[in-house]
Image (cartoon, rainbow, N blue to C red; front, side):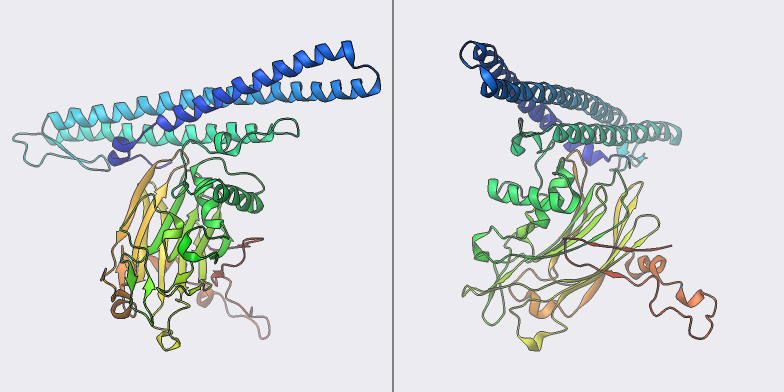
Length: 459
């Protein structure tokens, strides 16, 4: 796990763990009450229900009691993990804030990554600054490690809890399987939540357990719930990558800031600014890199005209992965409502590299000047950090018309592509007729979510 940052420590809120623990305790009490009722009925049944039918019903009651005992035990373990996790993370967080405050009281400046500078501090020694920096960086590392440890413990506890479900005892998904915090955009009702859980289970074979799982679950939903989409669903494509545990999920949103944009007729935009909790339906294109579950998923939402015409296009997304876990994503999405004359220059496209590093996620590459781009990273415990914000060059309704044909670099730009270059040209010459037809490092094109292809790894 990478170290936490100052910003994360200041925002960290363990209340979600306490809240879900309380919900589990209430559920445990409810199971216990129902179990006692069944046990009472079991004992009373001997007086009035004899014979094979009575024995069969008592066997059913006993199965429920046994299942309830197992479920209650699993719930109690989850409660313990949540309470202990909240306490340990809060202790680590408090210590980070304490050592930062100590350095600042002496006039030092503390950067987001924990580096300490003595700018403007008369007579401040480099030795003192170094001592503060060492202590702060150590504290941030402990906080990051503790977050990863608690996330792992919570995931295991929730997996155990999910496995305890049976015909006799079923847990309400909104209480037990929610994880310690809701996913971004996860407040749209029970139907959407159920669809998200089903989509995730079809892909992974299990229900979503934590905020990373839920974020991935929501981008997979094949239905649209926003009224403007008039029931037209998105197009979703996916591929499997090698997981990088502890890196969470990287969420990329490409959105139109204005309410409407010029087309023939005008189209509706997303009418918003950057938002760490953005709803995946409030984007034109969203791309998620789930390093916990080993998935890259891209989603193109329907385009809507002011006259109510709704159409959706299929995004073209090609992906490679490097041996260190970095992922190169080449995406291309066309507005299906745009006149044919606008193709191919007026499309949302880019070539970006997502790199997991000890100090955090890096985003580099080349993207179109429009629309706006936002990148966030979510941890399994529900923390969110801002990675990159790249506003549209024009937030006006004329943005697509004047900006889409043009590109600009983010991060280190095209330099990030070097490690994904094919080694094909450096391979020894092949004998006639034996040369492979395809480049072994050719990017993998994302496809359907039912059985996603495995993304090529460039080694």
